[in-house]
Image (cartoon, rainbow over all chains, first blue to last red; front, side, top):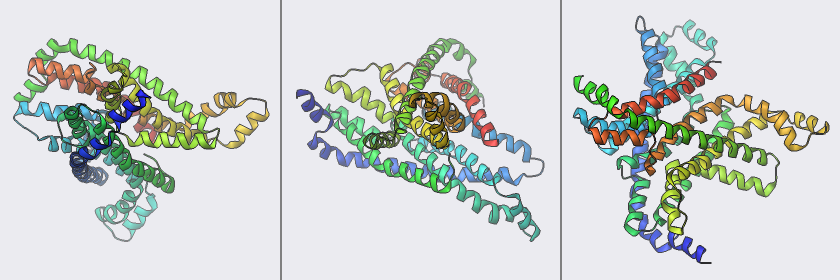
Length: 230
Length: 218
């Protein structure tokens, strides 16, 4: 029985749970703010790169495509924690100092943009060639075809894999606790140190599950409905 | 440009600290080896058990899989490494990392293997069973070989993410590539070892990215 009492005391202390809640809520707010900013950067840059790649510009089209591919491959192959460590602890050696918030946004935003670019590219390349020919035949320019015909469709089919990827990256934001970003996990660790009791950590874990469980379910539903996976 | 070369591509620093990086590399490879095998085995086990369709057990497996998919790997790792000692369970950093990665990775692999198993027509199971194979034999010799081939692309994608996630172990002071590189940076006041760490990860992960590209193009 003493084992159960210990678990109750150290993992689920109700008083401590209530006391920890305001600080954890602050941390959650930072997690949400940073995640939304990352999504803005990631989707924006990713779409821009995918369009740049699809435009197939004269002369520079080929080297540009190569550069975009290298960018996407390197960022997809790098662990977030390594990149964010380089940006946060390495950049000051060059006289550039990022706050933890912007170091996180820069790193994770760049990574999300690499995944988003690949997903959008897949959507653009998967479109029925007949649609492009029809649009061109009815007088639309190359760019107009891309903007009004190809992109709306490409963005729509990109929604399920992009949702998956965004959930994964938002979860990975907890890694930014290692560069002292005061997000949910960092705050939980801080409270654990103050109270010498890991209840806040357990509470943070519960908050993460409550937050992401519905999102994970939703992304599975999207995948099933739209019949694609990322 | 010169400042960049001096701080991020400094050969002298790299020569001085290569020992750190190599020990770190071996630690990371050991971590990947252990946890990847356990995660895949655990995921395969869950998906095979789930396919038996025992009502109570399936609810539990679905709950486990979705919960673990909702929990960031670092949170799980910290629960194991920092919270369990309070109730008298001390886990060394390496074991904690392997445990966290396997429990988490197993949930993802379970989903993937399940999709593969469900993609194989039921008639094959029925035919194999009619021929006298038991459930385990049917799975092992008929269903799984085909199922794994079907899910090779998501399997590769997931393995890439899995390997990248192993860097989180550095947070619990496991002397892996990243941890060793950070220490080398602190002792030389030069972040070139971090570049070295990134290059080592790229050497491991870029082939997988290329493989994923090939799957996507087919």
